Image (cartoon, rainbow, N blue to C red; front, side):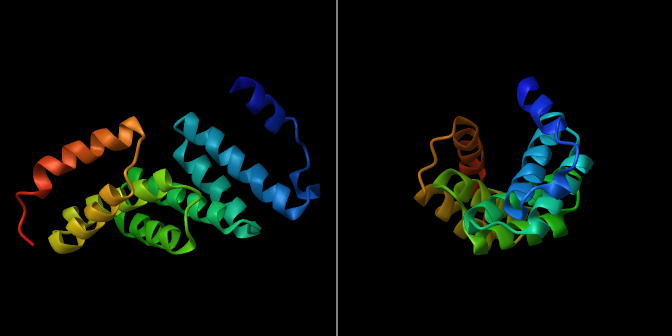
Length: 151
């Protein structure tokens, strides 16, 4: 990670990069900030990368998902929900990211006490059969409670 950060930080004039490469540059910079738990810096860089656009729509979806997750960690649930919904509409690069987006929406709906929608998002998450251990752990935790709620 230190080597990657050194390479990214060695770029002095990112505005001289071609637009798609500049977008990837800011996305990577945002990823590195996330690793350091610098949510403000990560959000700024991810939004800059998103504003530049990406030739691959799935990458846009993944960026929106991350910005949504950042908003959720900062406590802005309304904005987080908006970004995650946009991410789902844009599409995800793989089933793991899609499952994470649906699971996050399930959590949001449970907090809003919209249980029918929460169960639907949970069903979509399980249908994707995620293999990520952290995601599986969250699915198991929610499964304990979701069967007991009405809707």
